[in-house]
Image 1 (cartoon, rainbow, N blue to C red):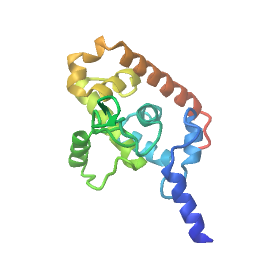
Image 2 (image 1 turned 120 degrees about the horizontal axis):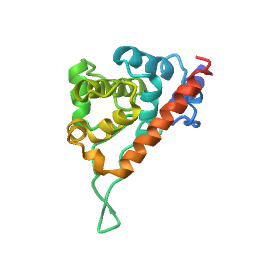
Image 3 (image 1 turned 90 degrees about the horizontal axis):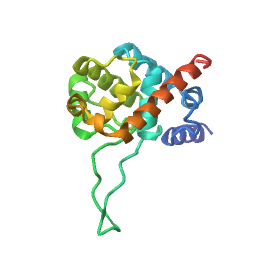
Length: 189
């Protein structure tokens, strides 16, 4: 009986939470002993100074809280599955090179992009770098998301200024962060 409970608990961790537009519901769905998302997000907030609602909104926008997401494959001749447009993977959609840099700089060599606690720490680390490199305030969800999506160099160049669709995504992410902040005032955490 205990073995069945363990298998069911682990199987539940493999799928994305079902109510992802309410951060309290997300935390309630992932409040296990070994994988507590609220605790992981608060630890990242303490370490990097990025508010939990911004961390969670970034991950919500990037992966919908799904651990094994990758960009869809392009099609060769319109129907043959081909290469992926990038190496983005996991909760944070971190690229291979950026993930390697994160592990090297933080010493978290065992970190995994499909483990929530590692992914939320990565997002905090990246947003913290955006603050140091680009002067973006840690509570500025809009510009933090644009720097996250475009990368620090492209953000500095201003590539985002001519991309109306990504500005719209950044506004939606900002709204999600604001909604999450309001919801967290009533969470039972």
